[in-house]
Length: 144
Image (cartoon, rainbow, N blue to C red; front, side):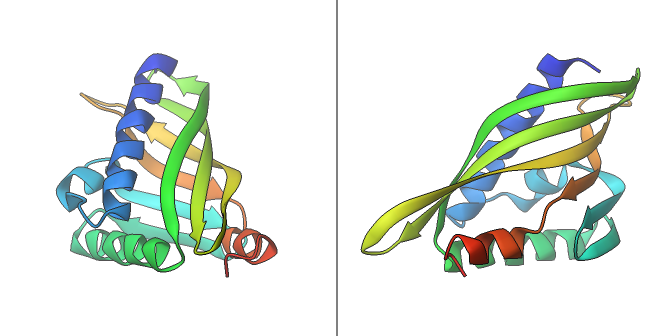
C-alpha cells in the first residue's frame, strides 16, 4: 500500500471530520472510510464493531460530543506508514485538535492515532485503530 494513497485517504478523512464538527457530515461518506468490521483499542479497553447503522449513530454522537466540548478543528499533521503486505499497513497519523475556550485562548492538542488499514479493491479502509487516553489528555489540558 502506497504512503501517498494513505495520506490522501486521511486528507479526505480530515475533511469528513471537519464537516462533522459543523454538523454537516455525510454519514455514508464517513462510514465508507471503515471496513465491514473493525477493532478499537485504548486504555479504556478493546472494542469491536460493525460498519452498520450503529456505527453511523456512534459517529453522530461522537461529533456532537466534540462540538459540546468546544472542538472547532481537527487538522492532519502527518502520516507515516509501516507496510505489512501488499494489502495492509499500519498508518501512524498525527493530528492537532483545536478547542474553543470561550473567552480564554484556544487550546491546541497534538496526538497520534495508529490505524490498521486494508486495501482490497479501490480505496483503503480502516479496520482498526489504537489510541491513547483521550479523556485523560482532555482533563490534563482543562478541556473537560
